[in-house]
Length: 192
Picture 1 (tube, rainbow, N blue to C red):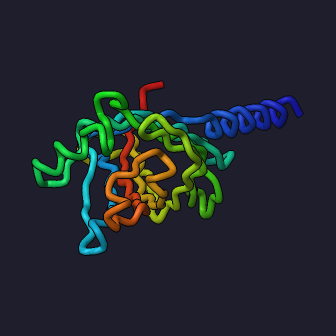
Picture 2 (cartoon, rainbow, N blue to C red; picture 1 turned 60 degrees about the vertical axis):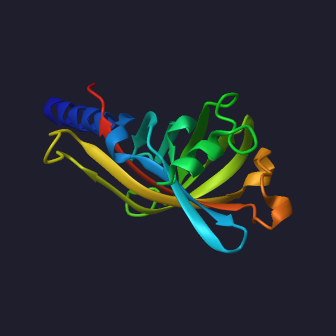
């Protein structure tokens, strides 16, 4: 009987250990939030941010976790230098006054052990609004072939109205305010 109780206690301890939340650091070299925005109804401009940091906390067994991203606004990149400069100006992103954007959210709608949604808030241009992101792909590997550490990655997407964040440039010229987000993210498990 004593052996059975010890075995049950060991099993319970192992289950508790496996269910503990794990913290991952954003891999800045593999994380580039990108966006699509209308250009007077003539075309769609696409850009990305080249500098992102933050953490992901995941408890897969308990089906919960959080994301905390910080985006350097000055790292905006349209692949067009003049557009990059204009985007940073006071009439669009106003990087001098609002140098960072953040996204903080919680995982939701787990299926097969993976989250399918992020419910959170985007802070952009000094304004915070709720923004939900659909996770279209999520995967973790126990040992990444290059960094030799547990790594998780995801692709998420969502949309928001930029005028809700006080970014009204061009709306009087026929620019549409809807912005589509596409976020590729990879994060590496931090040492325990």
